[in-house]
Image 1: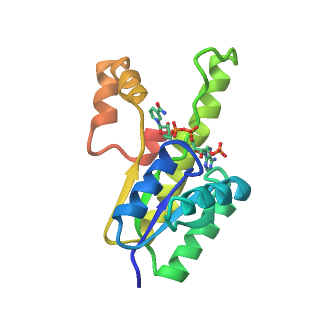
Image 2: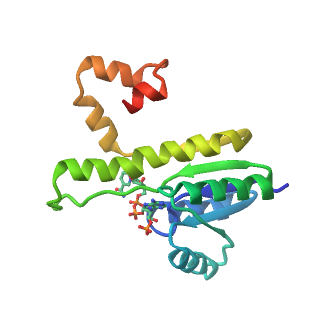
Length: 167
Ligand SMILES: NC(=O)c1ccc[n+]([C@@H]2O[C@H](COP(=O)([O-])OP(=O)(O)OC[C@H]3O[C@@H](n4cnc5c(N)ncnc54)[C@H](OP(=O)(O)O)[C@@H]3O)[C@@H](O)[C@H]2O)c1
């Protein structure tokens, strides 16, 4: 079976650039994915015009059915996945006046909880020697450094469990 890589949220931005690079460097099939099939197909066509040949998979990380359908597709067609790049994410603009609590809830829904769900669904099908890359932000370390020393130590500890982390 050919090796296979999947990049979430890759119809634009950093994910799109990662797909472009993988198409040039990765010896296997590279999947560009998007929550919107139209935007995803347009992005694939844009890379086709550069002579690159990514494949396409619809994937909305906030939609459990979409996540499971993608997992089943890779499991059935490739026997699993060699590379998963969890890139999909959202960010409010600095000038956005949406209340902080709402911004926090909306941001965590995609950037933390949906990425956690992606890991829970896909880790069991990552092939031996495979890789999972979680694209993060310098904002994470800035926020962590603003936590109390005790909380920082818990977040950094090797024995923290998912339940405690989520709490
Ligand atoms: N740019 C920066 O300076 C920066 C800095 C630090 C970290 N990052 C991180 O880098 C990653 C990519 O950022 P970017 O700057 O390339 O952002 P971007 O240009 O806004 O692209 C984000 C991508 O994620 C997709 N996405 C959002 N929600 C999704 C969902 N529920 N399911 C699937 N895809 C979804 C978007 O799809 P749509 O087109 O449909 O919205 C888009 O393709 C993010 O995780 C971000 O936190 C970026």
